[in-house]
Each structure stands twice: as C-alpha cells, then as structure tokens.
Image 1 (cartoon, rainbow, N blue to C red):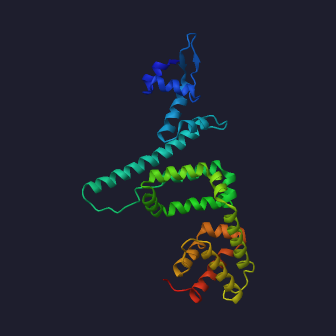
Image 2: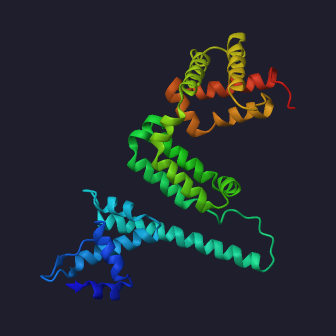
Image 3: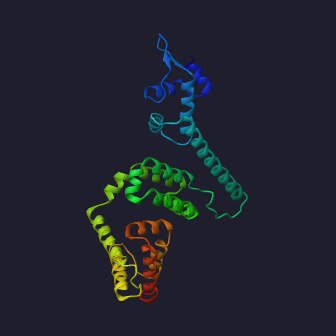
Length: 292
C-alpha cells in the first residue's frame, strides 16, 4: 500500500488531483486508515495508469470514468487500443515536424498529407461500435458505414484540405465532428423537419419509379422522362443549384461509388445503382443543358 503522498511522488500527479479523482469517483483509494488517510494498492495504480493513458489521448475525465465503469471493460484490450492510438498520434507528430523542417528551410511544400484524419477516423470507428442502432438506422447497415469510413480514408488528403479551410485546423474539425457523433441521434431528429422528411419521401418515390423495371431500356421516353422529373425535383429543392453537365456528372460519380451503390441497391434492388448511372449518363449525352 502507498499513501497519497507516495503515489503523488511516484506519478508526478499532485495530491489535490488525486483527491479530486476520488471525489468524482474516477479513482477511489483502496482503503482508508483509521485517521482517514487514503491508501492505494497496485490495482489502484494500474487504474491510475489507465486513466493517464486516456488523458494523453484527449479523453475527458467524465468519459474516462464511464469507460472504466463499463461491466465489459477489458484492461488489456484497452491498453492495446491505446497503444495503437498513441502510435498514430506519434506518427502524425513526426510527419508534422518533418514538414515544418522543410518549410523552415524555405521549401515550398503544398502538402496536406501530414494533416491526417486519424483521430476523426478513430471517432467514426468508436461511433460504429458504440452506436450500432443509429448506424443501421441512418446508413442502412454496418457494411455501408464501413464503406463510408473507407471513403474518408481514400479521400483523406482532400477532406483534410476542406477541414483546414473551413475549421482552421484538423484538430478543430475533429473536435466538431466528435461532438456531432456524440449527439448524432439528437441532431438527426432536429434536422429532419417535416419539410425535409417530405422531400426525402418524394425523392425516394422518384428513384423508386426510375428503378421499378430494370429491364426497361434506359433510352426509352418513359425512363428519360423520370430522369428529367427527378433532376428538376433536385434543382427545385436545392439552394443555388444549376442543373448543368457538371452537376449531373456529380450524381453519376456518386452512384458509381461503392458506398452509395450499396445503399441504392439495398433500397431499390440489386442493379439499381448501375441502372441509375446509365440513365443519368444517357440523359447527360442526349438531353442535358450545356454548362453555364
């Protein structure tokens, strides 16, 4: 057993901090002496070690307490995961230092790969593991969400550029995204107004009509009429959207991606996404207005 002063000396943590950890239920002493002094055994020190690793990774004390209190908490598994995250953090720091060294020498380095999204991707993985119901509800399946995560990884450099442009830094972007993930269900319910729900419903109906018969020739007047109706609907319900060739190409690209493709096939039937792409492409080649 160690006294609180001995633990403070061993770890470099102040006695006041240890007392605070006790007060909030994060780290209770193993026992109290008759005089009320706190004593800590090896198990308590292991828990403190775990707490410090979580703090190093940016977890808040409340979050750490909730994690450690979970009935299925696995200490060894947590250490392995913490090691992985710290290695990612170290690698990211090393890349940033290398980039700064090059910039310090006056080199022109328009590189964004150093600003990786490891923390954000980790947050997405944690969200998937801890909010399965929400993932399935809004993405259709765990597989679809995995494809979404993979798309973030594949487009990491581009996402990093946008994040820095909009938020000023990867850290601020990740913090904002973590907040959104932590409150995802409430945010979705808030954003899904009756008007938005109705737009989504009408969009589903139009895509459903377009893919109702996949044997229908994509060049048929019936199919192309639905495509035109669908594109007009999108334009009507989107702000400042120009229904030109570039935008239709965006739709074709979207429905060609595995993530969207899987969701569309799940909703409208196998092969639906390919049919949508072909129908849009035919419209683009034969009916679409020129770019402005």
